[in-house]
Structure formats: structure tokens, C-alpha cells
Length: 292
Image (cartoon, rainbow, N blue to C red):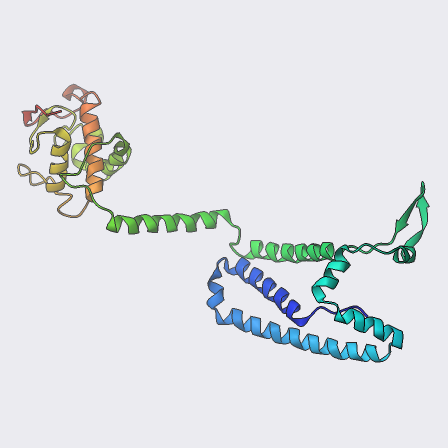
């Protein structure tokens, strides 16, 4: 008789399979707190122990039928540690006598063929791979497991949530700390399109609001252009009540206003002004002489 696998090893294998199956269908480790998972674990362990007890009964019955020599050999094999016997069955080479027992009665060119069994480790990996493939195909076909679109959406939501959480506590630009950066122009343009285009039109050429591309300004509260833009966008205009105080009203954060100010500074200082002949609004206010 061959040495049987200990119950504890069977239980460990079952737990591994259960973990893999639950993880592939639930797609995270939240199942570890589920009573269904632990109920399945308990039931599986009980079944494994029942299976082991039945195996012991069958083994005892077979043992009674062995001869004295066979019993002695079996007892000696039984005393060998399980892992050692597993290692030997997987890697131990056959003796000359064992090779004669499995020698096939044909050969070619002086090479004889042995009827070797496949190594246990190979068979184990093979059947594990087959079982895993079946579970994977079922999980892939009927769940969102390994779905790149689903994984991308979840990762995107997680990143957005982390950004929003950061923005709640991130230090915001103020009148004193705001500074021009070309890196903010692109984002500032998008914020401008959402909040400012209705009055200042596309590209800041002016409409209800003044032309933002020329050098004439109704409000010049600060000595530099960038700081002056930030001040007006944040606090509104004392000369024009329709100009929203985006910062005071909480419609835009200090960092958003810094980006809008960068875009307006860019179209005023780094692009050619849009003249009335090009569809721009006529100059309003006084000519500015900004500090550099």
C-alpha cells in the first residue's frame, strides 16, 4: 500500500483552492470577512476529515490482509516523514532492480525504453494548471475578473477620489503666494472656457466683458499684471458688479484662479492682441504700465 496524504495537507490544499476561487470571483480580499467564505472553509475541513477517517478504515482493512513481510515493509514506509517520501517519489532515481521491473521489451540502437511514471511534481503542476484554467475561464466569462476596462474604471475612480481628498487639504494659492507658471496655461484655458467665455468670449477677445488681450484695463489693483488678474478674478471688480468674485464666492479655488491668471497673462503678454478689426472688443479702461 502507498502512504496516504496527511489530512492536514489536504486541508491546506483545499484552503488554497478556496482562496483562489473566491479571489477570482470577488476580485479583492473582502471575502475574508464574509461568513459565506468561512462557512465554506469549515464545511470543507469537516469533509476532508471525514474523507481521512474513511481512508483510515479502508487502510486498516487492507492492512489486515497483508502478509507479515508486506506489513513490515508498510510499517517502515509509514514511519518515513511525508515530505521525505514525497521528495523521493518525485526525484529519487530507480535502482537497477526497479529499472528491470519497468523495462519495456523493445528498444532501438541499443537504447532500451523504461515504462516510467510521470514525476509527482509534474503531475501536480499539470492538474493544478488544468483546474486553474477551468476556474479562470468561468471567472473570465461570467464576471469582471481580468477585464481591463473594469480595472481601468476602478483605478480611475480611485485616483480621482485621492486627488479630491488631497485638494481638500492642499494649500491654495493666495494673493501673496500666487505666481505665473507656463505649466498652468493649458489647465487655465479649460477653466477659462468653463467660467469666463460667456463674458470675455473665446480667446479673451471681449464681449460683455472687456478685451483681455490688449493693454487697457479697467481694474489695476496690483503693480504687476499677473497679480492684478489674480486679484480681480478672486475678489471681483469694484467697477463692474457683474464680474463674479470667483474666489470669495467659492466657485474657484486659489489654485484654479492661479491657473486662470496664467492663461490670461499668456494671451495678453505672449500672444498678439486681438484688435477690433479682428473681432475683438474696443479697449476699455486706462493703458497699463505694469512692473516687470
